[in-house]
Amino acid sequence: MQGVHRALAAASTCLMVLALFVGMGMGAAHAQAIEPLPFKDHAQEVRFQDLTRQLRCLVCQNENLADSNAELARDLRLVVFKLMQEGKTDDQIKQYLVARYSSFVLYDPPLQPGTWLLWFGPPAILLAGAGVVLVAVRKRRQANATVAPPIDIGDDW
Amino acid sequence: MSRYLPLFGFGLLLALFGFGIWWNTQHDPNEVPSPLINKPAPAFDLPMLDDPAHLVSKASLLGKPYLLNVFASWCIACGEEHPVLMAEGRSLGIPLVGYNYKDHPQDAKDWLRTHGNPYDLVIADFPGQTAINFGVYGAPESFLIDAQGVIRYKHIGPFTPQSIAQELKPAIAALAKETP
Image (cartoon, rainbow over all chains, first blue to last red; front, side):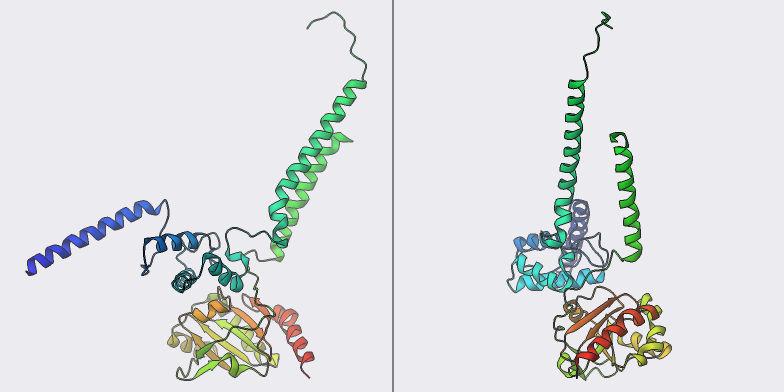
């Protein structure tokens, strides 16, 4: 009986190690939050991973909450998890964090007066550049039109 | 005229580049602006560091302004700030409440014993959950909370004698003017 138990334990250890390796392989594609959280089902876990990937870690600001190892990121993941269990929607959870850490916590900057330059600046510069080119081309064309045609000296070269 | 256009464009980019460098010397790009300024401080109920059985709440601190200073023994910048608080804390004229953040109580006590204790009262948040409500993302951070429990000013990073003289003291003076 004990032998069976031991064999089972060994087998499950092997499986866990295997799962770890598979997990590492997948890690490159999308890193999983490190601590095992008691999700209700797979759909909730996917939602959690998706949401924490849209939120910024405030300590290491080039990382998202899902990837970060910072302690604060772990705390915030727990908050996100807790709010999910309470039945909050993604937007409500984001609002909860924005109320505490400002919209800086969102990876996608929201469209608001403070971010107009960020959203509309590049297209505006592009349009301005296009305008300059257009004016230059038109001027050159006009200049070419008014200049007398070159005298044909019969040289096709 | 149009032959100088590229030079003009280059000059414009150069100016923008210079402005960017200058801007970053004046501002910390990692600083997260607090949305809690001029909003009521979140409610809390935290144990005193020296007497964990004794809970301190936001309500129990209402009535006069105080400075809530988030610190931890593991925080290097807090070590830089600490002598400044030791030297200037008394001259602020308001109580200094230490907020011990994610620290082992014994480490915090040892730290205060070694370096001195500038605080009138120290509360401890070992799990760090209450700190999230304050929007704390590092230490040191300081909140000036008025008599009504509203956050009036936040300082991120260590206080220096300059920032105390130029930012904190004027903010405290403004508070004193309001309360008759």
